[in-house]
Image: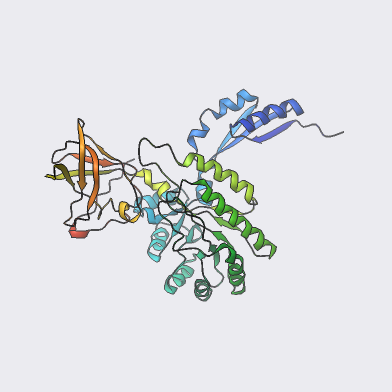
Length: 402
């Protein structure tokens, strides 16, 4: 006769499957069911969860705040998106880890009291001086995608933990990163073996599906490739421990858009659970996703003209400044106005003397006056990070708000 089940703790999401399981457990085993959920920042999904769990039959529900652990273990913030000191300070306080691409970025996060173990040196092409500097500072997790890079790492950072970056589909992404980076997945295991023979620690695989990627198939194909490499590596007794799924998570730039990450996140979670052993650590390198929504750019109209029967408005910021993401990162922004009224097709231009500095053509704009404000939301990423002072134009002043 089996032992009577008196109490069951169920990982509860509030979805149809776990709600049905609560009732099934109660009917099947006549036991108490206690629901458990983890708060990793998914605010919307947690709304009403307690009431739903009790309604389906759970005696109680515990919701643990695991946001700090999630940030520490999963999120490696790509500081290239925005390296403002206050952002770095906030991320360090939140126990996040960091993706750096240079010695300057590395020194900045170390100066902000991030631990070397919280840093991945994720540039696959590093000067030997940078590799040696990383090793001296205790930053030992690095990416590579060639034998030549392995040789440099082995010489200047012996014993380093390395992730082989593989080339994966970037179809439909705004910026295709596999054009420049990534080894053919078929060669990944052989490179990991070479790394091992060189005295390095081949810790796993990294990939990047491209920036602002909304095509879920890119992630699925990339993760399936990584899973095949993981199985092959373990068969060859290599110490496979980490899968780095990169960044590129999309954000919303226009009011009419749905949140593009909602569907993507649920598929990612499901596929990661399906493909990888729980012992394998999953990390990501989000940049835009974290800081994109964190800033609004305010610009003033400094000039006005009529050219070929069309109104032109000249703003005090442009493509050489905070809107540089339109050039370097193919960003598209929604321009908004404090002034209302009838709109007409107009052109927005930046303040420099270069004709390249045209921000938007054929924009529906209410008639503006000198001194009026034009603003752009969700511009925290790849704006000040790539801004210049061309023509001696000052960079936008950054104002922090609580």
